[in-house]
Amino acid sequence: MDLGLKDRVAIVTGSARGIGAETARMLAQEGMAVVITDLDRDAAQETVQGIVAQGGRAIATACDVRSEAQVRAMVEAGREAFGRIDVLVNNAGLVKDRTLLKMDEADWDLVLDVTLKGAFHCCRAAIPHMQERKWGRIVNITSRALFGNPGQANYSSAKAGLVGFTRALSFEQAKNGITVNAIAPGYIETEYIKSLPNYDTIKANVMAKNQVTFPGQTSDIAGAVAFMASEHARYITGTTLFVTGGRYG
Ligand SMILES: NC(=O)c1ccc[n+]([C@@H]2O[C@H](COP(=O)([O-])OP(=O)(O)OC[C@H]3O[C@@H](n4cnc5c(N)ncnc54)[C@H](O)[C@@H]3O)[C@@H](O)[C@H]2O)c1
Image 1 (tube, rainbow, N blue to C red):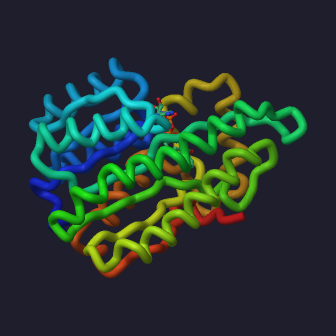
Image 2: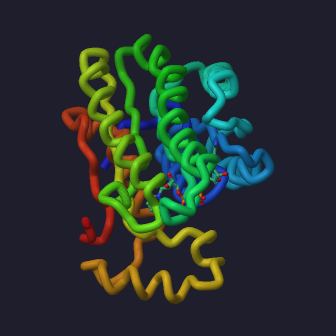
C-alpha cells in the first residue's frame, strides 16, 4: 500500500529515542524528510545518522518544546532544510510519578507543560506552513493512562487534556485540509523500559491485563502514526486510536 507520503516533510518531537525515533525511521522509509528534534542533541544526531545510513533524509535540532522561541526556530530549521512542513507528530513526553500528596508542584507543571504547552507551541508554529498548501496531518501521542493511573495524576491529566486539545483543533483545522488525531499507546517496550531494574515485574503486570499475548513494540505505534499521516486517513479527524493490545481501563 502506498501511503502517499513520499517527499513530504515531518517533524517528530522527542525523537532522539524510543517511540519517536522509531516513528521518524518509519516515516523516512516511506520517503519523507524528517526533522528529529529533542532535548538531547547528541542522541538526535545519532538517530539522524541511522536514517541517513539507510538512504533517508533527516536533520537534527535541539529543542525544548516548552519554549515557544525554540519551537519556532526548530520549525523554521525544518522548513529551511526541506522547503515545507506537512506532518507534525507531538510525541515528546515524560513521567514524574508520585501519589498526589507527595507530588511536587514542579513535577505537576513539568509533565503538563511538556505535553500540553509543547503541543500548543508546536501546532501554532507548524500549522501556518500546512495551511499554505491546504494539507496537513497532526498526530498527538497520548496514552492509555488518560483513563487514570495511580501515581500519575499529572500524566493522566496531561494525556486526557491532549485528547480534548486534539478534538478542539480538529474542528478548527478541517476546513484547511489538516486532520488532527491522537494515538493512545498502551505498554510499549522501549529500550529505556527494558533497561529498568524492575522490567520483568512491569512486563508481567502489564501482560496480565493485556488481551493480546505479546507486549507492544515501538513499531506498533510508528505504523499507526504512518497510517494517520497518510492519504488513506484523509477522512479521519478528531479521533483517538488505542494501540494497547486490547487494554482500555
Ligand atoms: N513507552 C510506553 O509504554 C508509552 C505508553 C503510552 C504513551 N507513551 C508516550 O509516547 C511518547 C514517547 O514515549 P517513549 O516511551 O518513547 O519515551 P522516551 O522517554 O523513550 O522518549 C521521549 C523523548 O522525549 C524527549 N523529551 C522529553 N521532554 C522533552 C522536551 N521538553 N522537549 C523535547 N523533547 C523532550 C526525551 O528527551 C526523550 O528522548 C511519550 O509522549 C509517552 O508519554 C509511551
